[in-house]
Image 1 (cartoon, rainbow, N blue to C red):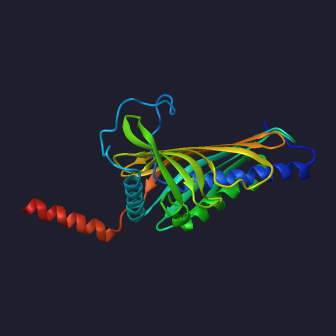
Image 2 (image 1 turned 45 degrees about the vertical axis):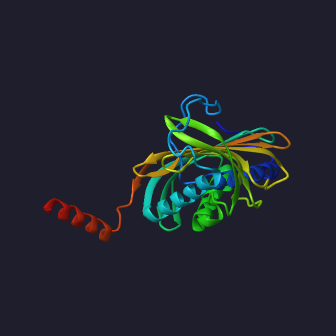
Image 3 (image 1 turned 90 degrees about the horizontal axis):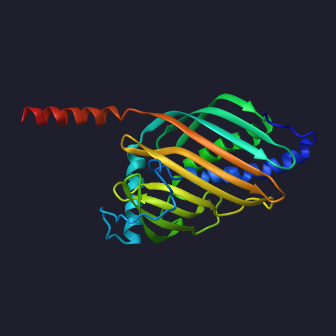
Length: 278
């Protein structure tokens, strides 16, 4: 059960501060729509096993291949529908609260996201000023992916090392934003050495959006659905300066992918038929 405070104005002050940082955290993580499977074991522990794929690549080559992979994915991904759950808890001054919403999310290329709220529980204040604001932030970042993409235009990259993640070779890169945009982040990303997709993110927002916020940590993991890497789990932990902690969790459901363009399907079918005849 959540506890609503008897001083709604004071509660709103602190919860809106949390809303700002949680919104920024989501946007920062959401911009990377190419990612990785779940980690096994300690994600921070170094692994002795060397990369077996493209181990000779330098950081500039890795970043370029990552950009090329992101561009191809954007061209090939026509759309999807999936059901996800957003939940947020706030513990501390002036009250303990929690809220959750279940949302049907629809993506249509090249950059349109729509959300339909299926259910809502818990604190109306948190739902309205945190969770629903997250949906707006995600729609904004989807509209122009260039401003948030993991490219040399937005970040400086440093190759830190190599790791095996869930049996897959990955490059570990430190990223530093070139501007203090609320949609960017600083921290570490893991890039899959086979698919050149961002595997995992451990980061913090590039800009602190409020004096009331002391610290925010972003943890983002994705999974491969067919040929595409898509978000699987996101968690952002926020410490409020005068006491209190907000935790946002997003769990993504199964993706229902849109069918390719009918002309593409027909061309592929004709090619298969010609090959059989030969």
